[in-house]
Image 1 (spheres, rainbow, N blue to C red):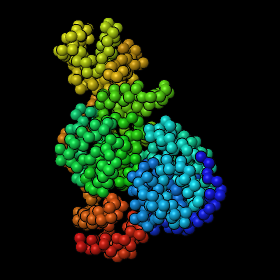
Image 2: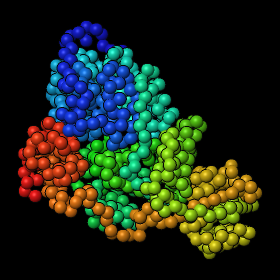
Image 3: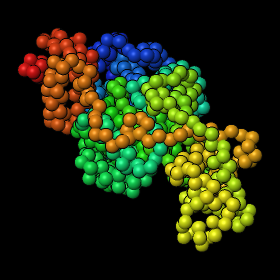
Image 4: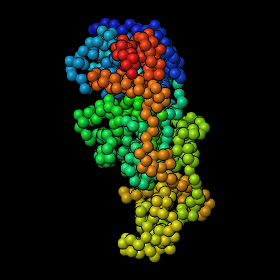
Length: 624
């Protein structure tokens, strides 16, 4: 889309906002209250401050936002941030304002007079950071507005949305490749926490950033413990997991359908848990109210479809649970990455079963798109199944998907309790023989449940009516339980030895089945164990709360500060972490500063927060 004509641009002379800080280090200390950058933050910031482009792959919680916020405070002009979600804009603007940064957004939630105020402030050079959605950047009016002011930097957040093969493609991101022509000379950053090497290359190509310097941080989130267990009674398993978490912990439970979300949230409420539902079928007011409670109150569990969560800045999410299989490793990584942004121990738990595999395969078969598109969806699912079925380290498998080598982590379920393997060749041959006989002798195909009944010699009405008790394979699998057979079928589906077909998920031999039937291919299987990661068994034992790492004498101070923080957040109508994060409260409880000058040594307290909260914090500490 071409920029407005030059006369329109010249109607108001641009007035760039003066640089707020002489150096990036000054901005870090004054605004954020930290003395040193983490990882490659400093190198990224130097690249952008010097006028260069950057493509940044950095895991959630590693500090991506600092990489564009600080250049906007050091360079003259206003930093433009392209953000895909309104909720994310609101949270980040609130957090920046709390730190004394002049931040604003333009989106559909604003009244006309409010948008007009922001537009005037931008043209007058009175804004440090301006957040907009990619859809709004495709509006000629917005492009014209931006041309009337002066931009210091352009940040494209969640840049993986530009990938047409990715899990979260958004067509409006494709138009962002024109930003270099619309605003020549303005450095750009493309940032994401989720990208394979192929997606990484696609980001640079589609956003037309051929000279950008690439920064790829480790994808490892060592504070997250990954657990996956076989799905038997998912809601009871979920409840047992939730009851093993810290008292008052907040978390997210993902389900595939709106119906499942509503039913699961209702079930958890009947069990005494503070659970809310979130999906696109709820009205906007209800979604906003539930999201606000999740962000601002302790102990809230959000049960949601994947419509919830991208860009959620809540740092103290202690767990993310999946009761349905995600469609891709990218989606799983992004969703689990919403846990533990503060660096404290967190858990990613999932229950995964045979029905998930059949359902996902059926959805791929029924999806619109050509053969190439469906093949790509199948590849995503295969990688997700490989993560679920691995007998090795989960984290090693996950990082390997993103092109990162690593050793065993020692902190996932398969490392903590290595799974047993067993020889599944004979059961696989029995199952395949049954499928082949039904097809050749009777022209029939069935799903997993009926096939297991045949193999176990069940006396069901359907078996009698179909005379399947006359099959040579009838009853030859009675040595395995129904749950064992479902595990066998799930793992054979995951490896392509079986395929699910049609609307009803009937099973058929896959390409590798011939070698299995002939005995030429081994079939090692993992032996399922319920509650492998410590989430099973129905235990009500809870892990330690956020103050547990403190000495016993410091814990009452932490709790007093936490109560004070909640009151402040409630009065201001903002999430508690915008006042202070748990890490800052722990540092305050441990060091117990006595003067305003002492507060400068506490990480996370910049000048604005010291002025706003210093006296109150010192009073709470003195009286505890």
